Length: 303
Length: 286
Image (cartoon, rainbow over all chains, first blue to last red):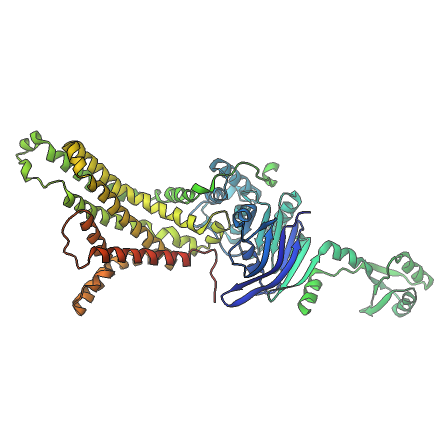
């Protein structure tokens, strides 16, 4: 799989402050989440990848291109949706998106055609001849997405795409992001404070804290690893069951009427049913206990 | 809605050459600017003086018509350096007014609306952005300054003959150079101030202030200090000094030509520095 973003001991200073320190990672997922508390350096990392912040030390490559030497190629391949309001108030959506397409190198006729297509795609087809100054926050977010994808980028960078959206618009935005992911035509780098958004859409997660990488997780792998964690709810004597399961190699703890356990390697789940049947203990529920992204994030923050 | 409209499609067509991409900004800006009837009317008004000059040149060479109007050909002012110097002063003033109309809306809205990161996240540099925005003013101002000036020169050359054109070829160069200097200075000041204050109305007021307040303060400084240093901040006087030199007229200005060129150079440098500071994808808060 192609490496989307490759950082090697990347450090970035703004003024005299070091914002990013020694970042080294290779990201190759179809959709990558960038997480971290305020001031962690997420936006600075995005701005650095776009060539807006000068690299102090180390290197960064986007889709194989060094951002210091080939920034124009990088910008041709990248679509960027900024966090803040970014538009030209007295332009219609179709003119605005068309102009952005032309600035990315599309011929005028193709840019116009693409502008109509992407505005329909993001759900602004009917409002595309209205000036941007009259748009609601949700519509402005959608226009920002439209201008970011009009030129068919290989990497789409989304900075807080669900900011200021109501639940319905948020669902719509996430659906579009998943759709773009599933189209298989571009990678997505999603920067968000909202863990749920990242969890719903991303395959890989990079967590930053104070300008450093504190955790990198492949969510799919983490989930498969987490299949060794099981949570049981019974309608009887948990303590006795825990003792019996410990004897066959499980590590058990009881909390709130539930039994949580870590299964040993190659453990056959049917043994749990056998032990419970011997004790004539009805099992009401058996779940794989997954670490949520929130658990992963909190662990990373505590590290 | 049709299904095809709900599906993302990749773009795999051709791409344009980056060299002329800056002109895209100018094209879209013209489309917006010419929606204003006032601007169109103003541009039409700007053509009155060149039209009057053309009529004057034609008249001064048309002896039968002059006779019919009971005018003596010798009584008509000559078409020489002074004639074109006055033309530059009049059209230069109109160019200044046009700059105060158009200039403030060029960069300020982009900065105020945070659009800069959208422009610069594309294969489009800061230099191309400034070139694109500057082209808007340069072309508009050219239409009312040196282009009609050259047309007047050609009319005069046509009426007076090849010998006049050959002897006065320097006039054509002076018209082009003198007015290009002025429109470049105006464009740079307009862009720099528009980028600096990020607010259209304030930028317009500042452009007026730079020229009128500069002239006022210049006179005040001269009177108080009994020197000529106040003339350094009076850009109108500075450019008039250069025009007088280019059109080979005697100048009563307080500045030498070298000082005038130096002031213009410093002004342009300052504007470029200001643009380099402000035209950025994002602002660093230190």
